[in-house]
Amino acid sequence: MDDLTATRRTFGARLAALRKRARLSQSQLAARLCAASGTTTLTRNEVSRWERGERLPDAWLPALALVLGVPADALEIDADRARGATPELQDDHPSAVVQERAGWLLAHDNAHGGDHVADAAIQMWHSERAKITQDHKAHLRVVAEIAEIAGWLLFDAARPEEARAAWMESLHLAQRAGDRPMQWFAMDLLAMEAVESGRIGEALALCDEIVMSGVPPRVGLLTELRRGRALAAVGDRSRARQAVSRARSRLDDSLHPRDPQWSWWVNDLEVTGHEAEVALLLDEPARAVPRFERTHELVEAINPTGRGALYYSVAQLDALVRVGAWQEAEEPLMRLGPLLNNVASSRNRKRLRRVLRSIYRDGPPWLIESAREITAS
Image 1: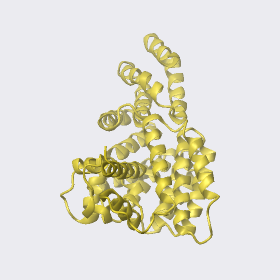
Image 2: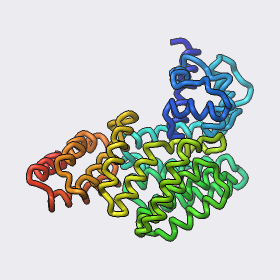
Image 3: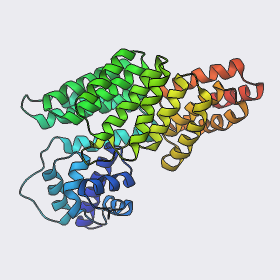
Image 4: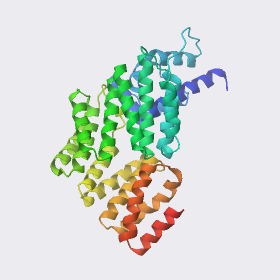
């Protein structure tokens, strides 16, 4: 392999890491780039060629910088190097290496869960925080993002108090940096944690604050999902359904270039999953069952062996057990064996333990035996 080919592949690997950090598939990135540039000519195959180092995204560099949330000049310098040029300017932006590492952590979480990488994210977060200088807003944004990632991994590892502390710092640093999109993200995640921990008033107040700050469409959609979960948790059936219905109606028409890159992973899978979880919170498991069947179909097409597959398999099993559909419950239960071997996500395992207790208490003997065999292995 010659030096130029190696440099092109390095540039492609960085693009792939940035895409994963933004939690986008190649198809989603292509769609966002088309929205940002006002064209419809880009496909997933072209993004794949960039990431393999077969082509350079020359005309797409400004849109890539916008969508991936990186400095345009830094991306241009990297592209120059990939073309074989030796630019006089050096890329000393603090986010370059950190973003690649963050992309790896998120990719690992997506494939294998957050348990084993949460502490690595904390170490990265604390290390970069120690380098903050008062006037370096770019670095403040980087550390705010690392704190957000650390918080998510801690949340997945069932360490909610630590996750909340990380997101509070992310919000504080984003405010200091003047980074509104990161502020919205931190508040959204804080609202999610507040719902899970039963602080419903706090969650609803955060949702109101997000919406009142004039957010773009995708952020507003996600806020409606958080609001729906919060309202369902206190039994407000009518308003909870209205909130998730508004989110569903906005899904098709909410794509907008102003949407921050972190919000663009919100898709049909996300909305359908929230609809199902709201039904469970409202003690309507029969309404949740077909929606979780749909999430299984969707996640199978995306990542059938990763954290998302574990989450939705456990959730589907939860709904089926609640309605006493024991025959149907066997299928998601049997899926859990290999998933539990591949994914270390304490948050999902904690929920699974609750579901298994229900099976052991109320299920038929043959299902109880299957459950014990799977969990023992």
